[in-house]
Structures are given as structure tokens and as C-alpha cells.
Length: 142
Image (cartoon, rainbow, N blue to C red):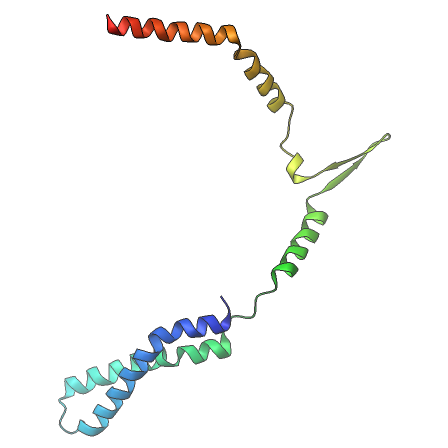
């Protein structure tokens, strides 16, 4: 979120806190002689609690988060990091092999698994499977 957006969101709490602080200050100045001690303590404590909330948006504008870099700059920086850190070049006498993070976990096991899966499912295998299902249904009906 940008600094301006954060400022605007913090106004949701700052506006009521400012209204409360103004009312408490005016009431305290006009009726301080008539107030009991406990009411003075509560009024001052509430005024001290609402003042920082009222000033928070301006603190965000002054000390808030720095501007975020553009998405294009972030993508370029991350691409440069990947090209330097994650890609290893292995030199062989005949050719050059590049190992990248996406190739790191690829093995021949996935190809073997697919071949084994194709062998398991054949027309005859399906017929035998369907026959067993039909036999189980007939046994359940009887």
C-alpha cells in the first residue's frame, strides 16, 4: 500500500478521534470547576488516548513507508538474481549442459511411471475389471 493510501485509511480512526478530542478539550475548559476529580481523570485520560490517534495520519505522511519499486524493476532484479545464482553451467568435452531450477527435479522416473501406467490399462485389463464389478453386483443382488 502506498503512503497516501495508508494515510487515507488511517483517517477512518483519526476523524472520530479528533472530534472526540475537540469535544473533551472544550468541555474540560468550560466546566473544569464543576467536574469531580474522577471525571477530570477520565476526561484527561481519554483526551491523551485520542490525541495520538488523531495525529497518526500526519505521522504516516512524514515517517511512513518508502515508495515501492515499480513491478518492472522488481521483475528485472529477480531475473538477474535467478540467472546468476540458480543456473549452473557444466562444461563437458562435447557439449555444454545448463542445469536450471526447473530441470533440477526432472528424472526418468516420471517417464517410467507413465509407461508402466500405460501397460496396466489395456483393453483386456478393463474387460477383466468390468467382469469383476458385474460379478460383485450379481453377488450383492442375490
